[in-house]
Image 1: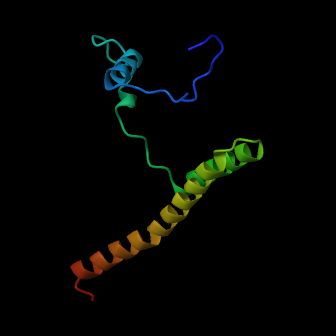
Image 2: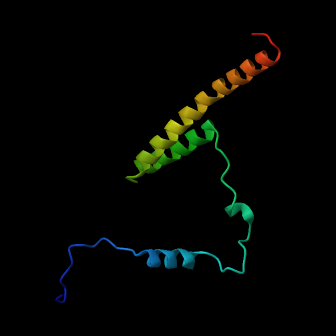
Image 3: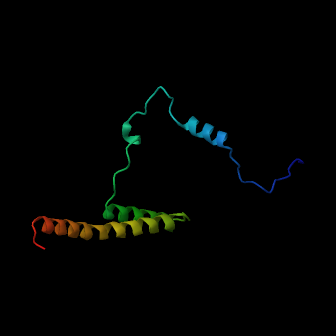
Length: 105
């Protein structure tokens, strides 16, 4: 290849060994545990209101020019709607179960 000649294929190709090395380099040393166990615990479930607030923030980011923010906001809004609809169905299920137990139905 000549000086100043650019290759057409600029996509980085990773080998499995290279990826493992990169991941291991980002982990803390083996003898030391992380500062808190919060990294191992799954995140708390967000309510539909919290998801809606996050979606609004992502919409603002989109208005500021962030190109990927629209899709994130849309996904958060859809999840918020789905979570909002879960509540009545759970309450109805509990009501049905109580009715069955009390032999009302």
